Length: 266
Length: 267
Image 1 (cartoon, rainbow over the protein chains, first blue to last red):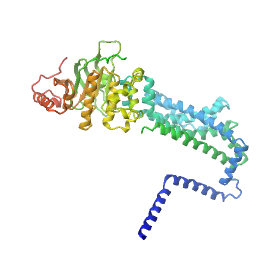
Image 2: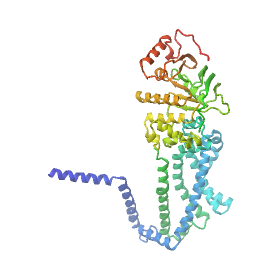
Image 3: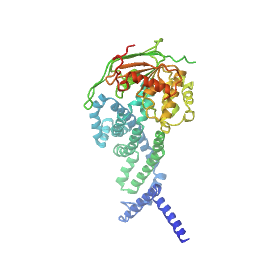
Image 4: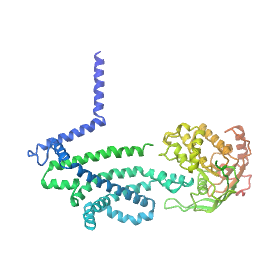
């Protein structure tokens, strides 16, 4: 009897421990920990100006959402992210395939590639603004140029790793070029393209903010600059939080399902 | 609706096939003075020691390798288009991101696809319940059956097979050989079948060409005049094998043996 009770308690404890060690629980724990650290840190700033508490930031976000056009600036930034992202992906994938598949092209373009890979984002932004004016196109081109070399690195590597034996199948059975490319070749690149896309979207939104700060009169970056000058840290954090939420929705709502779709045969 | 499968004969005349070699591998002559002709509709087996350039020969015949001194000619009465050539590789080479059905349909032209030719072949091979499965979920034998369906789906005039049933256990391999013969009889085509298994060659072939050590050439040309259907590993096959090896002891090592005239057999 006593032994049985001990056993039941032990199993319950074991189950609890296992649940507490599970991935979902760990994620929640990690999030709560962040809030605790943040809240504790605010104690060092009694004025609440330099590091506002989490609830103050949430409150500010609510205020800007309803009264100050947060959604407008968010959507403007999001459109720039999307335009730069798709531009960079299309051009980067095309160049990556070309450089991975054709040795001659690789040799010719490699120097340029290294140049752009190492060019500081800020330099590209300044040059684009100087050469093309403070326009929307210049802003998007500047962001895309920053991302393209990274996409090229990943896609070129993927192209080099393509299984030639499967392409031989297409040749023997005289599959036309279009089908060979779309059904035999491109699916082998999907994992690489997905990796480039994931890393890309995070990098791009960070650069978009700089572009907006330097030469646009709307968007999250522009607003952050404004709040910096007003020393409104709560608003800075509120905008950051809002955009991070948007990016997480994109990651879990678009990228992750897309990746599952691409790899469902595994 | 569709014309009967167009068959074609095959003439091989390769003076030399050399691999240049790079820093690590020395240059190497794979084939030298290899000549033979396979008449329309014949099931011809190529047998030889490993590394004797059998796969190289099939790659040349399939048009995958054109850097060769010589040619493999695939000829038929109707000369308008190059006759269709199918190749079943040593590994099934299915596209893992496509369903079984799509793996066969992808090599078909639209009318044949609309006709459901691929599905009919797959059903005939008892894969009807796997049409929407991905190849990774199939067993080794099932994957080979899909590859075989793909090879026959385009109604090839010439079918090349490169040790397609190697590394399968005996019953699975025998079942696949049976299916291959069944399809070949239903859909006559000229076959070039590479193997290193003499029993397999005797069971399947109308004729066996024995190749030498590299650089390879034909050392013996044997007609297999056993009636069909044959039974794998039956006494008839074993007797044929013993007779062949008694007359030409070195065949499996790539030499014609003591009692034969050496050199290539010319068509």
